[in-house]
Image (cartoon, rainbow, N blue to C red; front, side):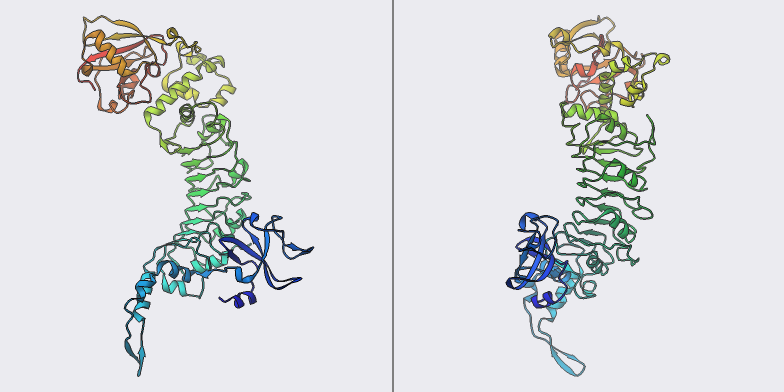
Length: 563
């Protein structure tokens, strides 16, 4: 398109590029007293401009920002290129096509025709027709170009990145996609698009589209719903940074969406989320940096599951304002939630160390299998839940909790603050008084555990009672016992027996392969109260982690094949 053609056509609303900066044309004409033609543009970056569209008291156009506008000569502006030109510029290897261009004479009808470069055209067409994944980011694409040209040249494209181009309207997008009926993935991020105000007629343009990225396009929620009728099989929808307000519930649209990204839309609040809570197939919801501080599911009481978000498996709440543990406890009501990311919130960035915070989250959300992209292993869950049960045991007892089920009546306030506590008591047993002792000052005598050490296979061996530091590692315990009992370290097998639960006699003490991978891994016989102790690993390999500060604990020593 020549500059003359551009200026005689309707340029208002067109997207343009000037020295790498993008803008929208808001005015075209004369700006007295300076002679010549000017374009008034509103910059995407308002710091790039000089005024608000006014000059010497006359308003030529309006900007959203007082310094968002400029007047520019037309010859300084890049209006971009059509889709097919951009494809050829990026994907056609001109050097290869120009090699060995030989003249050939062919007869068409009764007339001889020279075909210099005919092979090059065939090569080019073959090259483009094979394209399936295309990236045209920042290629100044402004539209579809000649009608039918895209379908003829590259009909097999399935994925296109058109981010940060010069597309100005949804109609231009439709004109491109209408020629690519196999299109499954479309990225339109950073194109300032105008969208239709009403639902477009069904056309089948996006009949195969499964993933659509509309980050920073200026789309509203109402416009999403209007266009969504044309996305019948869409599974992934990205709407980051659009100042979206969820204003109405999707009806008969977005019903196939499995992933919805609403990150960095700071106007979204808890009540708006209820409007999308019944999307039947929504499995992943990304709500990073929306400023949310609370989540509540009013339809579900303590220990119950909500009917909202029935299929939601993965929830992302990074970079928000969550500061209360009640929000984390509320997430336990989501029936299908298995993965959670909630980094960089006041709750997770407070005084507690990261590992303690992680354990508290795991204990409060019972079905989590992944937290902040790290797997939650069974032994980590057990440790977290036991620690949680102990940490809040004194509060539970003060609120009316009791080891006797008939007298166990914790207050409603306690149950609201710790919805899973009663379940943990049923799972592991109610905490004993010895576990609820207040933390003593850090002195050596306050950090000792009294352990009984016995050898079940040596009937003549007396039970040995020793005070040991709770910080002592299992490896050092083995060394100590080797010297004490004169048994080689390689032959030592240790297991821990809680006095809370007696170990049935038929359970022999022998190390199972399942216990060798983790330093304090609960065996299948865990219900009998036995825990095998291995010297390697790092999570829970100290006596204080294992014995849970029982006043009297038992180490069982067995001679045999050690680790």
